[in-house]
Image (tube, rainbow, N blue to C red; front, side):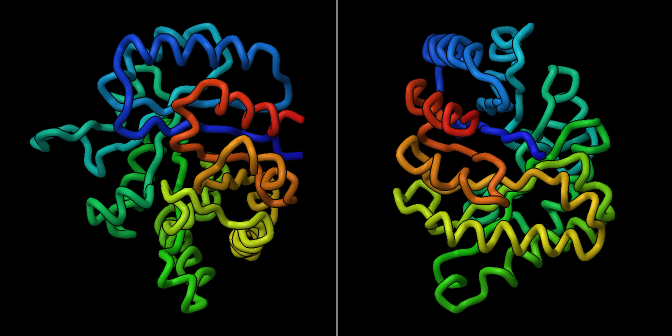
Length: 251
Protein backbone atom coordinates (compact mmCIF):
# COMPACT_ATOMS: atom_id res chain seq x y z
CA UNK A 1 0.00 0.00 0.00
CA UNK A 2 1.51 3.30 -1.09
CA UNK A 3 1.41 6.00 1.55
CA UNK A 4 -0.10 9.27 0.36
CA UNK A 5 2.16 12.33 0.01
CA UNK A 6 1.09 15.98 -0.11
CA UNK A 7 3.83 18.41 -1.12
CA UNK A 8 3.35 22.17 -1.02
CA UNK A 9 5.23 24.14 -3.70
CA UNK A 10 5.35 27.76 -2.54
CA UNK A 11 6.83 28.90 -5.86
CA UNK A 12 8.23 32.48 -5.68
CA UNK A 13 6.19 33.49 -2.65
CA UNK A 14 6.92 34.15 1.02
CA UNK A 15 8.59 36.46 3.51
CA UNK A 16 10.20 35.63 6.84
CA UNK A 17 7.18 36.51 8.96
CA UNK A 18 4.55 34.88 6.75
CA UNK A 19 6.71 31.78 6.36
CA UNK A 20 6.92 31.35 10.13
CA UNK A 21 3.17 31.72 10.52
CA UNK A 22 2.39 29.29 7.70
CA UNK A 23 4.84 26.66 8.92
CA UNK A 24 3.54 26.90 12.50
CA UNK A 25 0.00 26.24 11.28
CA UNK A 26 1.10 23.31 9.13
CA UNK A 27 3.07 21.77 12.00
CA UNK A 28 0.05 22.04 14.26
CA UNK A 29 -2.28 20.57 11.67
CA UNK A 30 -0.03 17.69 10.64
CA UNK A 31 0.42 16.64 14.26
CA UNK A 32 -3.21 15.56 14.28
CA UNK A 33 -2.92 13.46 11.12
CA UNK A 34 -1.82 9.89 10.50
CA UNK A 35 -1.17 7.92 7.35
CA UNK A 36 0.04 10.77 5.14
CA UNK A 37 3.45 12.31 4.44
CA UNK A 38 3.69 16.09 4.14
CA UNK A 39 6.43 18.16 2.55
CA UNK A 40 6.93 21.86 1.79
CA UNK A 41 9.11 23.50 -0.86
CA UNK A 42 9.91 27.15 -0.05
CA UNK A 43 11.98 29.44 -2.28
CA UNK A 44 15.73 28.87 -1.98
CA UNK A 45 16.46 31.95 0.19
CA UNK A 46 14.14 30.59 2.87
CA UNK A 47 15.36 26.99 3.00
CA UNK A 48 17.53 27.65 6.05
CA UNK A 49 14.69 29.38 7.90
CA UNK A 50 12.13 26.69 7.10
CA UNK A 51 14.54 23.83 7.87
CA UNK A 52 15.04 25.28 11.35
CA UNK A 53 11.28 25.64 11.87
CA UNK A 54 10.63 22.05 10.74
CA UNK A 55 13.47 20.46 12.69
CA UNK A 56 12.18 17.70 14.93
CA UNK A 57 8.88 17.36 13.04
CA UNK A 58 7.81 14.74 10.52
CA UNK A 59 7.34 17.34 7.74
CA UNK A 60 9.81 17.05 4.88
CA UNK A 61 11.73 19.86 3.21
CA UNK A 62 12.09 20.15 -0.56
CA UNK A 63 13.79 22.61 -2.87
CA UNK A 64 12.10 23.94 -5.99
CA UNK A 65 15.09 23.62 -8.31
CA UNK A 66 18.66 22.33 -8.53
CA UNK A 67 21.61 22.90 -10.83
CA UNK A 68 22.34 20.35 -13.54
CA UNK A 69 26.05 20.67 -12.80
CA UNK A 70 28.41 20.21 -9.88
CA UNK A 71 29.92 23.21 -8.07
CA UNK A 72 31.70 25.69 -10.31
CA UNK A 73 31.45 28.90 -12.29
CA UNK A 74 27.66 28.91 -12.67
CA UNK A 75 26.50 32.24 -11.28
CA UNK A 76 23.10 32.09 -9.66
CA UNK A 77 22.84 28.28 -9.60
CA UNK A 78 22.47 26.10 -6.49
CA UNK A 79 24.21 22.71 -6.46
CA UNK A 80 22.62 19.53 -5.13
CA UNK A 81 25.38 19.18 -2.55
CA UNK A 82 24.54 22.60 -1.16
CA UNK A 83 20.89 21.66 -0.78
CA UNK A 84 21.79 18.40 0.96
CA UNK A 85 24.01 20.28 3.40
CA UNK A 86 21.06 22.50 4.32
CA UNK A 87 18.92 19.50 5.29
CA UNK A 88 16.86 19.40 2.12
CA UNK A 89 15.43 15.93 1.44
CA UNK A 90 13.85 16.30 -1.99
CA UNK A 91 13.91 18.59 -5.01
CA UNK A 92 11.36 19.36 -7.71
CA UNK A 93 12.71 18.78 -11.22
CA UNK A 94 11.01 19.36 -14.55
CA UNK A 95 8.20 21.54 -13.23
CA UNK A 96 6.07 22.85 -16.09
CA UNK A 97 7.02 26.43 -15.25
CA UNK A 98 10.71 25.55 -15.53
CA UNK A 99 10.08 23.79 -18.83
CA UNK A 100 7.86 26.48 -20.37
CA UNK A 101 9.17 29.75 -18.88
CA UNK A 102 12.86 28.86 -18.67
CA UNK A 103 13.16 26.51 -21.62
CA UNK A 104 14.28 23.43 -19.69
CA UNK A 105 14.57 20.47 -22.05
CA UNK A 106 14.11 16.79 -21.28
CA UNK A 107 17.90 16.46 -21.33
CA UNK A 108 18.36 19.21 -18.74
CA UNK A 109 15.70 17.67 -16.51
CA UNK A 110 17.47 14.31 -16.80
CA UNK A 111 20.74 15.92 -15.69
CA UNK A 112 19.06 17.60 -12.71
CA UNK A 113 17.44 14.30 -11.71
CA UNK A 114 20.85 12.62 -11.66
CA UNK A 115 22.52 15.43 -9.71
CA UNK A 116 19.80 15.27 -7.08
CA UNK A 117 20.09 11.53 -6.62
CA UNK A 118 23.88 11.82 -6.53
CA UNK A 119 23.47 13.75 -3.27
CA UNK A 120 20.78 11.40 -1.91
CA UNK A 121 17.99 13.87 -2.61
CA UNK A 122 14.67 12.48 -3.82
CA UNK A 123 13.72 14.03 -7.17
CA UNK A 124 10.06 14.95 -7.55
CA UNK A 125 9.93 14.49 -11.32
CA UNK A 126 7.17 16.51 -13.00
CA UNK A 127 5.68 15.54 -16.34
CA UNK A 128 2.71 16.98 -18.20
CA UNK A 129 1.20 18.11 -21.48
CA UNK A 130 0.07 21.48 -22.84
CA UNK A 131 -3.52 22.18 -23.83
CA UNK A 132 -2.58 21.88 -27.49
CA UNK A 133 -1.00 18.48 -26.89
CA UNK A 134 -4.05 17.27 -24.98
CA UNK A 135 -6.46 18.47 -27.65
CA UNK A 136 -4.35 16.69 -30.26
CA UNK A 137 -4.66 13.45 -28.29
CA UNK A 138 -0.94 13.32 -27.48
CA UNK A 139 -1.10 13.39 -23.67
CA UNK A 140 0.19 9.89 -23.02
CA UNK A 141 2.91 10.17 -25.66
CA UNK A 142 4.20 13.43 -24.13
CA UNK A 143 4.34 12.25 -20.54
CA UNK A 144 5.81 8.90 -21.60
CA UNK A 145 8.59 10.70 -23.50
CA UNK A 146 9.41 12.88 -20.49
CA UNK A 147 9.51 9.90 -18.13
CA UNK A 148 11.33 7.55 -20.49
CA UNK A 149 14.12 10.10 -20.92
CA UNK A 150 14.94 9.71 -17.23
CA UNK A 151 14.66 5.91 -17.35
CA UNK A 152 16.95 5.75 -20.39
CA UNK A 153 19.59 7.82 -18.61
CA UNK A 154 19.50 6.44 -15.08
CA UNK A 155 17.63 3.14 -15.28
CA UNK A 156 14.16 2.24 -14.09
CA UNK A 157 15.53 1.36 -10.64
CA UNK A 158 16.29 5.07 -10.07
CA UNK A 159 12.55 5.68 -9.83
CA UNK A 160 12.47 3.68 -6.59
CA UNK A 161 14.18 6.67 -4.95
CA UNK A 162 11.98 9.32 -6.51
CA UNK A 163 8.44 10.65 -6.72
CA UNK A 164 6.57 11.27 -9.97
CA UNK A 165 4.13 14.16 -10.39
CA UNK A 166 1.67 14.51 -13.26
CA UNK A 167 1.00 18.19 -13.90
CA UNK A 168 -1.16 19.01 -16.91
CA UNK A 169 0.29 22.36 -18.00
CA UNK A 170 -3.18 23.65 -18.88
CA UNK A 171 -4.23 23.22 -15.23
CA UNK A 172 -1.27 24.93 -13.53
CA UNK A 173 -2.42 28.12 -11.85
CA UNK A 174 -5.43 28.39 -14.15
CA UNK A 175 -8.14 27.23 -11.78
CA UNK A 176 -8.89 24.39 -14.19
CA UNK A 177 -8.35 20.88 -12.88
CA UNK A 178 -8.26 17.58 -14.68
CA UNK A 179 -11.22 15.47 -13.69
CA UNK A 180 -10.38 12.55 -11.40
CA UNK A 181 -10.98 10.24 -14.35
CA UNK A 182 -8.70 12.23 -16.67
CA UNK A 183 -5.95 12.30 -14.07
CA UNK A 184 -6.36 8.61 -13.28
CA UNK A 185 -6.00 7.69 -16.95
CA UNK A 186 -2.62 9.42 -17.14
CA UNK A 187 -1.43 8.11 -13.77
CA UNK A 188 -2.36 4.58 -14.80
CA UNK A 189 -0.53 5.04 -18.10
CA UNK A 190 2.60 6.24 -16.34
CA UNK A 191 2.52 3.33 -13.91
CA UNK A 192 1.99 0.88 -16.77
CA UNK A 193 5.03 2.30 -18.58
CA UNK A 194 7.17 1.68 -15.50
CA UNK A 195 5.60 -1.73 -14.86
CA UNK A 196 6.59 -2.82 -18.35
CA UNK A 197 10.20 -2.39 -17.25
CA UNK A 198 10.01 -3.25 -13.52
CA UNK A 199 6.75 -4.27 -11.87
CA UNK A 200 8.16 -3.89 -8.37
CA UNK A 201 9.29 -0.31 -8.92
CA UNK A 202 5.93 0.52 -10.48
CA UNK A 203 4.00 -0.88 -7.54
CA UNK A 204 5.90 1.28 -5.06
CA UNK A 205 6.15 4.47 -7.12
CA UNK A 206 4.15 7.37 -5.73
CA UNK A 207 2.54 9.43 -8.50
CA UNK A 208 1.17 12.78 -7.37
CA UNK A 209 -1.34 14.96 -9.17
CA UNK A 210 -0.58 18.67 -9.55
CA UNK A 211 -2.84 21.15 -11.25
CA UNK A 212 -5.05 23.50 -9.24
CA UNK A 213 -5.55 21.01 -6.41
CA UNK A 214 -7.91 22.47 -3.81
CA UNK A 215 -9.72 21.27 -0.71
CA UNK A 216 -12.89 21.00 -2.79
CA UNK A 217 -11.48 18.47 -5.28
CA UNK A 218 -8.76 16.71 -3.29
CA UNK A 219 -10.85 13.83 -1.93
CA UNK A 220 -12.22 12.88 -5.34
CA UNK A 221 -8.73 12.91 -6.84
CA UNK A 222 -7.26 10.85 -3.99
CA UNK A 223 -10.02 8.26 -4.38
CA UNK A 224 -8.49 7.19 -7.70
CA UNK A 225 -6.33 4.05 -7.40
CA UNK A 226 -3.20 5.47 -9.03
CA UNK A 227 -3.26 8.97 -7.52
CA UNK A 228 -0.97 8.87 -4.49
CA UNK A 229 -1.22 12.46 -3.32
CA UNK A 230 -0.72 15.96 -4.66
CA UNK A 231 1.86 18.56 -5.58
CA UNK A 232 -0.01 21.66 -4.42
CA UNK A 233 0.69 25.18 -5.70
CA UNK A 234 -1.38 28.20 -4.67
CA UNK A 235 -3.39 26.34 -2.05
CA UNK A 236 -0.14 25.49 -0.23
CA UNK A 237 0.17 29.17 0.76
CA UNK A 238 -3.11 29.11 2.71
CA UNK A 239 -2.76 27.03 5.85
CA UNK A 240 -6.44 26.06 6.18
CA UNK A 241 -6.68 25.06 2.52
CA UNK A 242 -3.43 23.11 2.57
CA UNK A 243 -4.38 21.27 5.74
CA UNK A 244 -7.78 20.38 4.30
CA UNK A 245 -5.97 18.75 1.35
CA UNK A 246 -3.69 16.88 3.78
CA UNK A 247 -6.71 15.67 5.74
CA UNK A 248 -8.32 14.41 2.54
CA UNK A 249 -5.17 12.38 1.86
CA UNK A 250 -5.16 11.00 5.38
CA UNK A 251 -8.77 9.82 5.32
